Amino acid sequence: MTTDIIEKTKKTAGLYFKDFEGERPFDLWRSFDKDLAKDLSLFITGQMYAREKIPHQTRQLVTVAALTVLCRLDELELHMHAALNVGCTPQEIAEVIFQTAVYGGVPATNQALKTLRTVLEEKDLWPPEQ
Image (cartoon, rainbow, N blue to C red; front, side, top):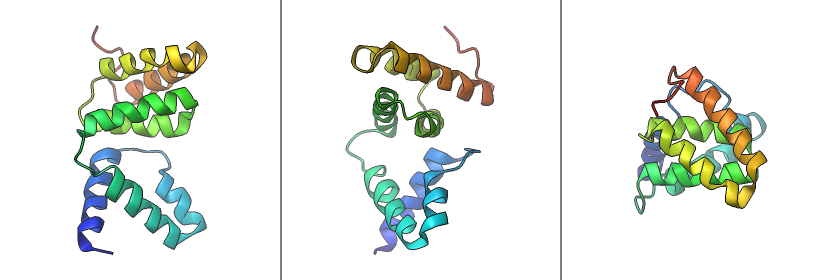
C-alpha cells in the first residue's frame, strides 16, 4: 500500500464528507472489521472517488442519480452533502433527480427530492434560488 493512496483517501474523504454529521459508511464498516474497513476506504475513496477522469462535481451528480434510482436514501443523503461540498448547486442536484424519474419512477424521484430538501434545510440553503 502506497503513501500516495493513503493521502488521496484522506484528501478525497475530507473534500466529500467534511461537515457530514451522520454515520459514514467507513464508521459502520469499522465497527465490524477494522482491517476490511481500511481496505474498502482505500479502494472506494482513495482510488475510485479520487480518479481524475471526470470532475468531482460530475462524479457526485452521477452518484446522486444512481442512488436515487436505487432508492438508497441513507447513501443518497451522504452524497448530496458531498455534491454540495464539491461545488454542485442545489438546482443541479434537483435537475439530476428530476431526470431520474424517467428511469427510476416518480416515487423514487419524490423520495430523493424530500431527502434533498432535508439536506438543504440542514445546511440553511432552503429554499433554493429559482
